[in-house]
Length: 185
Image 1: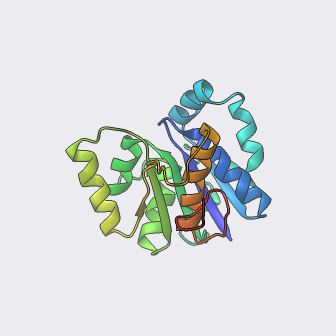
Image 2: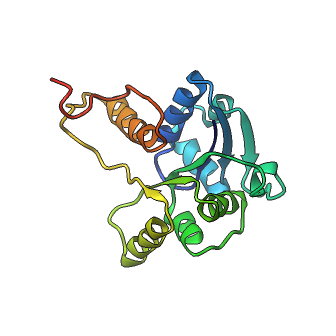
Image 3: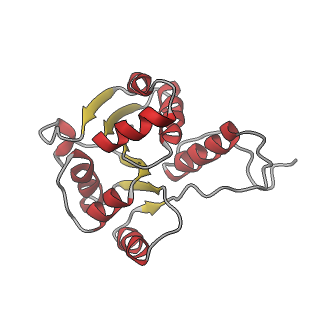
């Protein structure tokens, strides 16, 4: 399996970090793209954001539009944009492919491959909701990192694991990062 993971300029890169960690342990090939805005936000949120690159198989900057993964003939099985800024969400929803992230997302949609978008903003504007609707109609999975309480999280790590687990579920990859509903106390 080959998965593209993109990190954009929204808060929540720790979710991408946890996702990449699990995918690496499962020996799944990952292609990581980090936007310039994503790098700036990660600098605030992560202890050493440069270490996240070591969790991926291949790494790219958003301006590497000539990278192999930019071509629809270079088969990736799925793509996750986590966190997804509303700017990137709008670009993907409206077919504005101005960088490697949006180009890869366009490939996923036009080839009916799995695209998981994790928009990280609240509250949402009508435009953002409309763009989410467009992406859903195009076949994307819209997975806002909305917390659940039934599994009784005790730490921020528990919450991060829940979000990463939900992404893995949407990719149909086995995971045990959180207790599922009905699995006991």
